[in-house]
Length: 130
Image 1 (cartoon, helix red, strand yellow):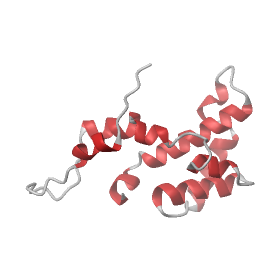
Image 2: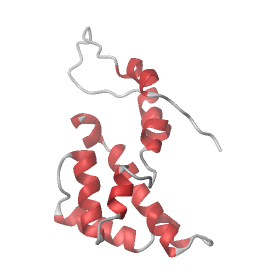
Image 3: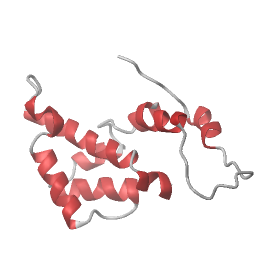
Image 4: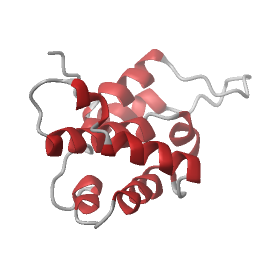
């Protein structure tokens, strides 16, 4: 398994503002995409530890409240009704691990929440807003 770790200090040069650029369009680099997808900053936030977003979400009573929390933390907005419905189906179905042999339904649901938060943190909406 390949793990790419990057600290916030290491990440800053990747996102340096190029003020000399004549291009008004946002163009992310491969290095930026890899940092977001595989870096320790994002993956470290995908833990169910006390004080983390997912840890806080685990204390909420229903899936809809958990999904709304993840949207608020990642995108600073609530999910649209269609997004909420889609993600509720995904997490209640066990996510991508539902078909895999081995994980318990609880483990599959926890992984589904991690997948949801990872997708939000790697979305273009998150990149443009933050």
